[in-house]
Length: 217
Image (tube, rainbow, N blue to C red; front, side):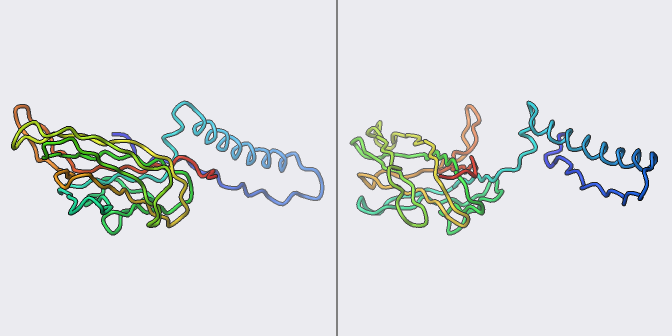
């Protein structure tokens, strides 16, 4: 079983003895031994980090969240935050107010979403999804998706809306996904387990937040 919390050992700063007034071969040998041990540990740590699998030692912020409820629009002129009710993974990224994805560290983040839409109308419909930072729309962040008309009465059409977006965030900023639709017959839908063949549940919404770099522009 792999150790998921394995970390590199940080070498302690060597405690060097006070040198004698006159030259001492014994002191020099002991002093060199202390330094040699420190540098061996330091080189091993750096080599492990920069090696082909060194990424396993990095502890970057991340978060993954999903929702298990249906989400609908009451009208076509209102923007609705997409909500989540389950935290799958959280390390420096947290969920609040059901829709706010909060970050604890400043940096550039990659935000990816997957939204399960359903259209029960007889016509094709558009859905827009965009990003808000601290309650304000982010410029050039909108995407438009087209849902075909329903296949028949009681048999709606479906579409997965998915994309990713890089955003520059400061510590304590939050991000929201927001949507609107051209008809209230379009909804964000979750589905339970299914059989023949056995299939897992379908969350209505999934979002992941991954730290990319602290070199924000």
